Amino acid sequence: MSLEVKAIGGRFYLYEVQYSWDRKKGRSRKRTVRYLGPCDPAGKLLRRPRIATEALRAVEPVGAPAALYAQAVDLDVVRVAEETLGLSRRTAAFLLALAIDAATGPRAPGVLESWVARGPLSWWEPSLRGASLGPLMTELREKLHPGTHAEGPSPRAAFEAGLTRAWTSRALVPEPPGAFVEARAPEGPGVDGSESSPPAYGVVLSRASLLPMSILPVEAGLAGRDLPALMGALRGALPRGTPLVEVLPIPTEGSLSEVVQAGLHVVGSLGGASKEVWKFTGRQAAVLAQGPPLSIVGPRGGLLAYDLEESVMGHRLRLGVLEDPGWRERERWERASLLAEWSAPIPDALRPALARELEGALASARGRRGARMDPEKIREVQERDGRWVVFSTDLRVDVPSMIQLLERRRILQRILRGPSVAVEPWKLRYGAVTLWELGATIGFLASLLWGWAERRLRTDRPEASLETVLEALGGVSAVGWSSKRTGLSWFAPLGADEERLLRALGATSYIPR
Image 1 (cartoon, rainbow, N blue to C red):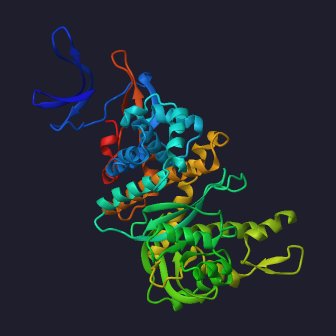
Image 2 (image 1 turned 90 degrees about the vertical axis):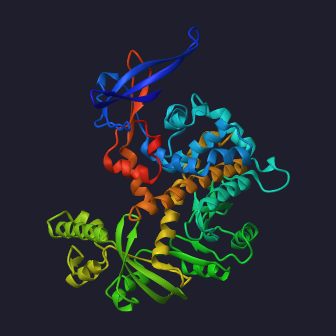
Image 3 (image 1 turned 180 degrees about the vertical axis):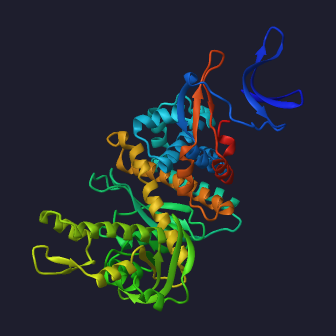
């Protein structure tokens, strides 16, 4: 199918035409398939074509997959997979489909096969049309098995190196490794083959753009981690003396000291209602801060941040006390509703649960209620609404960088759940090591597509996060329709904002128009 602009009476109209070869006449024939509507001389429709509802056949979400597929084309992912892993074109495209599924889904295995064979990926990669997951997964398993290459790096490591070369060659400034993030899948066989040990990944990120550079096997969680073995793996995978920051969720004092003594810096978050959090989220934050609060862009909008240095958990830390105005208002509204409920005549059996919800705002009192509202405590709690604390043991890491690292860890944790779902049907058939290699390969590619899209987005839309952009593009769906004269055709109407977002990501050409 192709588009043709016809000039009639000084106006322009867009038609969809189809060319076929006429063997008898020895030339091509043109057939007009349908009239799309009035357009400008360049072929851009002036209004959306009308589609009869009785002709509709399917609706396929296409916005988020197109955004990530555009990054794969920019990095030439399919070619790199063919060359480094020795995959066929179809299986290399299938690996890309699994990565996009991990970043935008994940979809259940039954839905995944239909999505790969007949969804938007099959429009952009025709080799996937009618694909069956079984043979493709078998080829991936064989090519990714660690014993495939008797000498040199493993297939997965060769693939990671090829993709790293692809993005570093396109980056304006080469980036050294700078961060190490632990992430784990929720379930499935671990590296040691036990069902109780979920797949765990250690992702080495570049220093500035936080793009993945390699994935290492780690024990799941801080408590069960063999830190000397991890440090040995890092030293073997990275140039000697590479400075790394490890990104942890909420470390304890013991785990923080352990990691620092091993030679790594730590970026993390001070948890819950600890004494340190209570101290730094009150009025004292403004007193201790080195200057006025910073106005920065967070993952969900604008944040205020106080930047200070204090001794916490036996270490000198750089702290960021963050305040989200929207979150603060929500917390205050919820507490006001709970306090109103506390003042109302409710059954005594419900009060203990309500008291737990209002922890910090009530004072002990005699009587059957056992507690009363305390205006001073309520004021203290309100001071801390919408605030939390992030930290770094490396005093050179600023607050915006701490937020980016912790946000990247959260995204990686979500993305690396996807491969676990995709390989679930093959858990009993494949070995645990092969499944880990497969999950790590899919997760590495998915996180690279995500990071490259985010890097590209920052050029045109620095205030937007990729997560919110993909949510906004979630409403972009291609409508499949058919008529007596033609087979199934696809059309995706776009709003002005959606078109701008897709253009910023270089994905407009992958939306059927």
